[in-house]
Length: 90
Image (cartoon, rainbow, N blue to C red; front, side):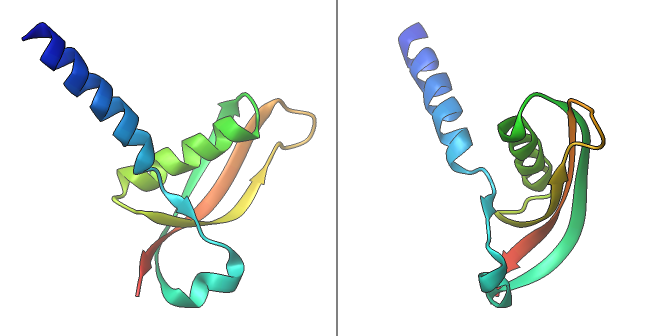
């Protein structure tokens, strides 16, 4: 029984990342409806951590797709900030 629970937990963790929001390029925006704007700030780490934070915010909104409108480090800060638009396929 314990092995089945561990296997189910591992499967859930592995598939959780498969559902992370996909980034849509500007050239394909016509195929999507814009839902709402989300933002992140004070994210420590590199660009990949900032992207993970944006994806997590989109996931919280139930979105599957996003268009990144900004992603940067203000001034000489090591903290990232960014904004994205939650999208839905037409």
